[in-house]
Image (cartoon, rainbow, N blue to C red; front, side, top):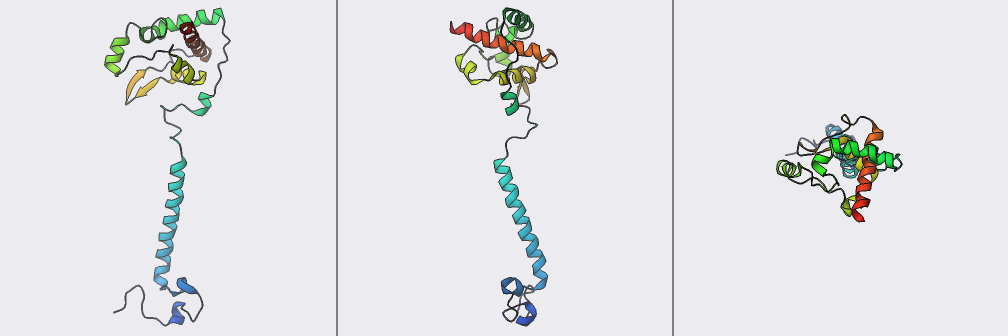
Length: 182
């Protein structure tokens, strides 16, 4: 009993050897379009699959620091005035968690550790100083740190609205690292 897909049709009518059109010509006409559709879908999936493998995290991922932000350079020149102004901001916004010297030992550090699951970062640690660019520090000050919907560090973009002031804080973080190495 013949299959519905390939009805008994003379070879010349199916595009068989008598027409010289090869395998495609031999398939029953009603299967050509469905098979073409299947191959088209498979081709699209293959292309889409390759694109997904090379794609990075979505650009709107708030936890990932964009390359452009990492590469930003601090426009603030270190001076006594810069450090004095940054110290005022530090006392107001950073001291309670990071401590006076940036060691992560501020008055709220233990409470922070209990609520958030880890202590505030020791910003004087040479590994921290070496592994973070100025741009990354600026990004974290501006955008904060959120993990699993927990605010680990609040964003200071609104609380310290002037970029220059946030860059001053970056300068102070670098100074705290230098002072700790002495």
